[in-house]
Length: 213
Image (cartoon, rainbow, N blue to C red; front, side, top):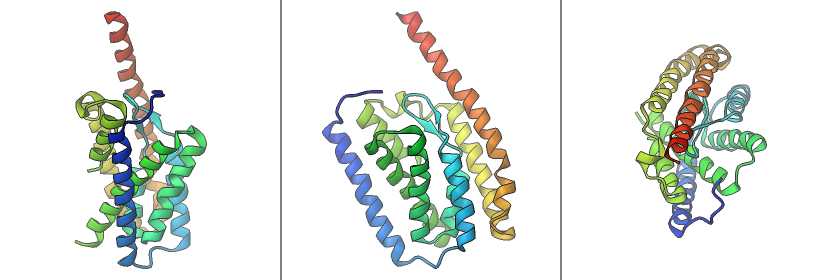
């Protein structure tokens, strides 16, 4: 892992995302409804913590989790307080296992909350790659193209998880939170696919560096 100190631009970026998360949390809380029942919160949060606690290390400082469908469902069902608690708890679960640097985990928490809050606003009143790309650029010196965020294989994996989120949300709204236990099954296959796909990309990169040397 890169041990150099963060640049001023990176620190400013993290501070800006943090401030935006606080502002959005306050604004969302003022117009938030009662949220879901405690049982639903426990089920969704518990599964979200389990999914988020086992990241797959991706290409160039990226980590992939199959948490997206749970975040989409939480954004639709939870109150602002529940949504904040959900995002905090899934990142605590990850931190217990991975021991990331605190500023990285804090940025991830704010980033995920902003994305979840935007999803909640869209859902109740009727992009998620860009904040991450900016962080990789400023903190790691990787442009969006060099970071690998736009690799077709990884974009396809994100799209598959996004497709899973729709049926999970609809069935949960219709049949109740226990349906999540059934609809979450395909995520196990998605995680297996990612664990095969991502290391293969890293292996090719290592082989290319070895040939160049």
